[in-house]
Length: 171
Image (cartoon, rainbow, N blue to C red; front, side, top):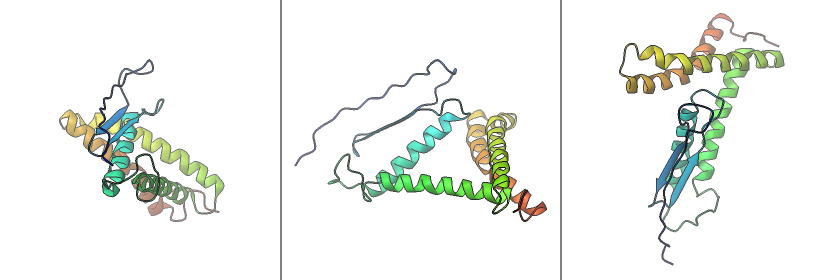
């Protein structure tokens, strides 16, 4: 059966909460895929999260797309499942970092580790790109800053392990 021709377009709006748009969208008529990821309202760098979600889903779909795939069907060959599994792995890695920082087997340590990891991540995302703009061009600083900010919690984990190998509040 021949594919039905479709037309796609996208439009997002800044909204009332912030002066910049944190939404991301993607259209690929060949893949017959249209995505919209709403910004993570209330969090810094919502546009980074939206863009990362788009990239993950598109790569998952593109890697596993076939011309005869059934649109809307979610199974192991659709790519959406692979994208979801990738995102789940990212969450598990962050959880592991939090537990290592806090101390294995310690609920209080996990709580403290989560607070510290969240604080370090937020501060790095808020200030690293601005600091880098003092040295690099704005586009380079934003790209480099996003990468360095993502690595900040791993640096925190390494520092904690150097000085407290069992974590901050071991069981």
